[in-house]
Length: 171
Image: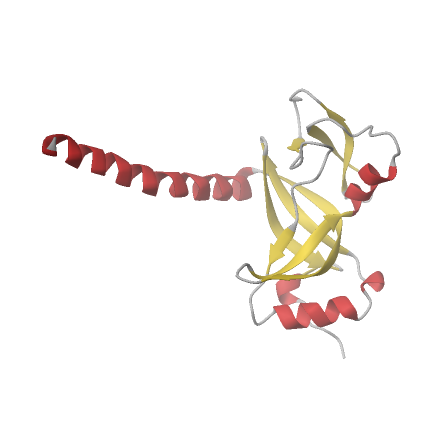
């Protein structure tokens, strides 16, 4: 029994270290080699105790999905196209995995883009919160997503072509 315990412990340790390492590798690989898409978003304030400082995001593209009385966006996979303005759109959704660029829905009932939060540095968060309350309607926020296979990673949040971490609130 004792002879079996050590190899079992070693396998358990490798597994516990291997799973998080693989998840980090997947994100880094997607950021480095994934296709880049720009989605317009609305940003609004949110703060979760124990979850850190973040802003909640909703892609403007998501509004289209909610606006139809009949759910024509009921597929799990959203096919991505880029418009003349450079912003990405979901051309259609399908129930079977497509070839080409696609995003997998984060919801089962309807198509939902898998971007919900953008985490901020704790020193940056108060300035972003004041920015949100000063009239977001004048701003043009968007996120740059990196997409590879069915993985999506937010590369950055931008306001008027300035990365949020470099944005300064005008008095």
